[in-house]
Image (tube, rainbow, N blue to C red; front, side):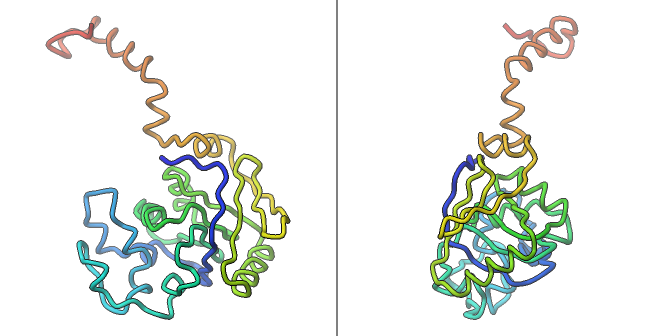
Length: 216
């Protein structure tokens, strides 16, 4: 998992409340058994005018010119600004995968659905909660100034506006530790690899019928 320390990026405004996971990545794309390749289908039904299906060449699609991510001013955006209850609906982990693989490193919103919030941290995507009034001010600034960017400093737990004003945010200490170090669940487990190997070796000595040979 990619580490998250300090990130400066262009902001894209998703001015909708209650964006659910089926909108983030529609159900037909869940058929894939891979964990990659979901970025081109992020917000698929809003982003394109024609229906999409797994494996389709994005170049063959008809983009919706009115959708925010198709507007040239937001090309390359890596911070998504959203309204309340972002990520509601079914508990698909594909939603943070699609956001991450599109290029987003962080989301800023007043609130999130719990499962989406947890899944985001586990997949290297930082969901920041700010008061609704502050989020509204960021929407106004983003719409008023093309190229509007923010800096997110996870270590200091602040969102830094272009003029230098800092907006503090909370993050649970363990989640912060994992993001700063790039540890997903597998990475955390591998930190204990020596103890795991020692346990397996001892177990095979005590119960040799579990394997044909014991570990050296």
